[in-house]
Length: 196
Image 1: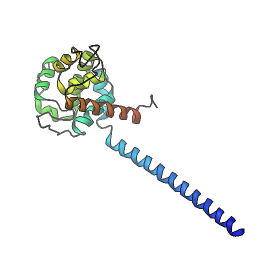
Image 2 (image 1 turned 90 degrees about the vertical axis):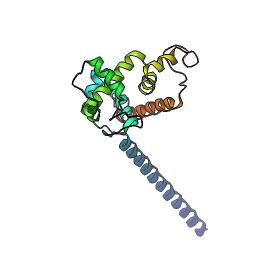
Image 3 (image 1 turned 30 degrees about the horizontal axis):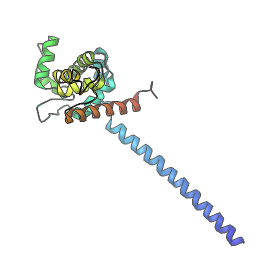
Image 4 (image 1 turned 30 degrees about the vertical axis):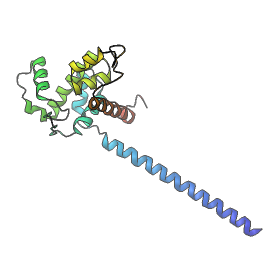
């Protein structure tokens, strides 16, 4: 009888130890994962992002999502098609923005400069958001071009209302838009205290 009580007591103690150990491991995994997410979604170039996102009426977390997706926060990033800098501005796009802004002193090499790149990238995002009005269409236009997105929005196969893209027919653009929207959600979840 005493042996059975000791055995039962020992089993209860072992179960309690296992539960505590599992809880400790769970908490460690959660905080380790959270730290990993924070490290992969940093708030670099905060002064420039906040200044130029505010000037152009766009969500600063959208800017961070674009920078993370486009360059991984590397100022010297160059894509396989020649886009430069943090927000990966193509030369033709740079020339168009420069013309629209009457910025005669700018040169394409400036796109390696964090401040100038974020300034131009935020201007472009603001312009696209004003034209399209949704994050998805704005991101699609940033990736595939305004003309392409306007064609998609006017095609009932891709947009039932001419505003929202229900289908993005280019897989690489669809993937890009998913990456931007997921990064945006993560940034808001991590840093937007108004939403927490």
